[in-house]
Length: 74
Image 1 (tube, one colour):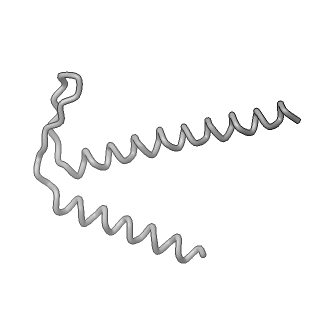
Image 2: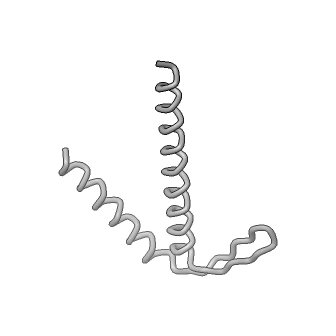
């Protein structure tokens, strides 16, 4: 099973590299009247990392809350 996980990670990394190489054009993002111009690949990676950090934090918070409520009931 470890090899399957490794293969998935390698394929995902390869897809990210291909995406980054093919998307160097600059795009402009407007958020609350703040304009950010950067390569599309860079913005995509930043958004992915922010999503991973917040998603992981939310999952950990929910798991901790669920485990705490189970201890309270017992």
